[in-house]
Amino acid sequence: MKTKNIRLVTIKDVQDLVRILINFNGDVDLISGRYIVDGKSLLGIFSLDMMKPIQVKVHDDKNADDLFKAIERFIVD
Image (tube, rainbow, N blue to C red):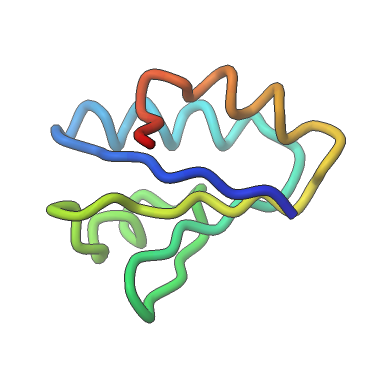
């Protein structure tokens, strides 16, 4: 499992992220506080607190780096 933090500012950011994650074959969870949602769920992402960074947890280690490269514009340190 690999993780990174992201920030989603606009509705378009959320839509773009979901489009990228839907094309990813592995499982991806988004975590905010005590809430965990499927990264491929548009409605689930909107239920998270987007005022804070959101943790992305990728369950497929061998393809995680490719996914992180695809979403690098959302990644924050």
